[in-house]
Length: 235
Image (tube, rainbow, N blue to C red; front, side, top):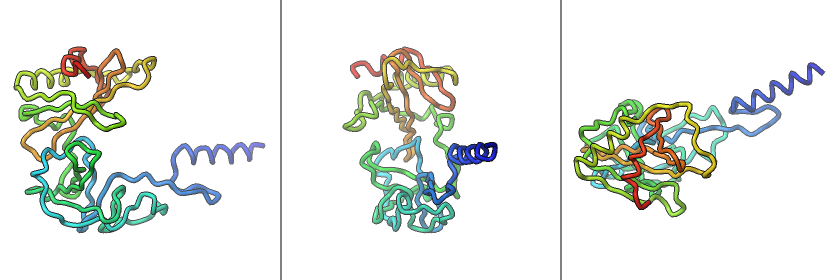
């Protein structure tokens, strides 16, 4: 009996820890990051940034040769040039002008139409909110996100005073990692906030509203003042 209990415990731990290969002939499970490998370098997706303008896109520098997700089950697989996690074979890879550490591919589901990637070999990830040069933000877009028809632009801020007021709401948001959102109203409303500077990558962050409280996740969960509603009236 003790031996059987131990077997059940070990098997349960294997499932809980998400092992890449399971005993008894089970399927391997691999959780890929969003990457593209090109010319010996691995590029990772910038999840908190979008292309600021199509004018930054340069010429084609390659194509995806192999999509690993759905085709690779070996956890020891070594990625090679032309591999991509989620893009289909034949996807065109484009350079970003004057930025050798950045590339892009077309993506109709992304704001401004391109998914952007950075070279892990050449630069660190620098698109967290703490990295954003607030003094250089000259335009903010707010989108109602997670809609069946896609993101919907609901507000665009271009005046210095409204940009500064909006940014201060985020800067002054109060960290509350123990915050529990209101579950009685169902799923929260999701928003995307896009911050433009002179850089080719605009900063992108999410905000949520649960019917009572605006909150976001610059690092830990942070609560935003109710004054935020002034920027999304009519949504």
